[in-house]
Length: 186
Image 1 (spheres, rainbow, N blue to C red):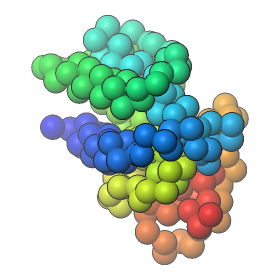
Image 2: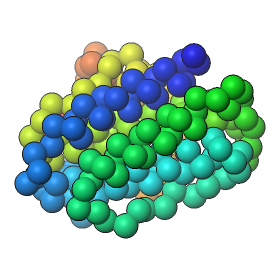
Image 3: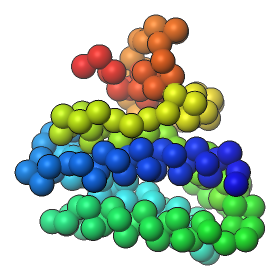
Image 4: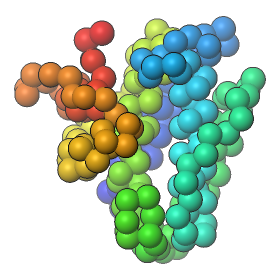
C-alpha cells in the first residue's frame, strides 16, 4: 500500500467515525464553512470522493460536482466511500497518470492532495454537531507538507481561508487547521 493511500484511507475512516455518530437532528447545524450546514459539508465531500473515484476508473480529469442534497446523508456517504475504495482496489490504479486537477500526476498524487479535504471537513462536521474529530497527527503532518506547497493557489481559488496563527509547537492537526484557515480554538 502506498503512503498516500494509507494516509487517505486513515483520514477517510476518521471522517467516517464522525459521520456515523452524527445525531439525526444535527445534520442541518451550521458548520464552520460559511453558509454550509453539516449536511452540505458531507454532500460536498461525497462529490469530491465521487470525482476521485471517476478519475481512478477512467484515468481522465473529473471536476467534483455537488450531489443533490439528500435526506439520508449517511447512505450517500457510505455509497461514495465504498465506491471510491472499490475503485482504488485494482492493480496499478495508483500509478495511473493523467492530467488531473492541478496538472499531470497519478491517482496516488490525487490521494496525497485530497487528504486535506477529508481532514478539514471531518473537523468541520464534528465542530458543527458537537463531536470530537478523529484525526491522526502523522496524517495531518503529511497533509501539511502537501498543502503548504499549494496554499497560495488554494487561497486564490477560494478553497481555503487565510491562515490562522497557531503555535509552531502545537499538535499537527491544530497546525493543519490553522494552515487551512480554520481556528482550532474556536
